[in-house]
Length: 195
Image (cartoon, rainbow, N blue to C red):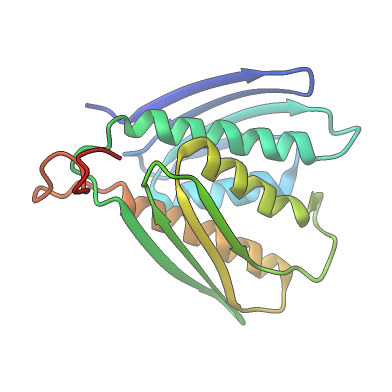
């Protein structure tokens, strides 16, 4: 069965269409109106081998908050829908990604219990046209819309661009690991019998 999802979400603040193929090649076409977010989502898709297509328009004349958060919501919904009952997948994934002076760690549990620990500080208010405060908001939206327990930590780092890039790459790689099928797993990877 193909693990894909197509989500459309329209509110008074944003209009988003997103297609996700979990078993992809890392291809992406991203247009959110926020160039640095587009770059980060491209990295996520490439390093996770996900095919990801995002078309989003939002009230950027206000600021980027609604667009960033709502793209996170829709991506989380797509991950949840594409994985279905989560049968025979590994469930857990962890990735450490270095980028020059920066080292990021992302650890994921596809538990169905949403939670976010975000331990990353940024020294500048923005990277390109993305408010750095919104990086945490993006991942909170993803975690709570997908039912993922998500831990993100910057272990070392000075350059904000490097920190953000390492986080998104590590997220892609950790999620790729967690969604991989394992022939040894019958049903779901839980003694409860459900995720």
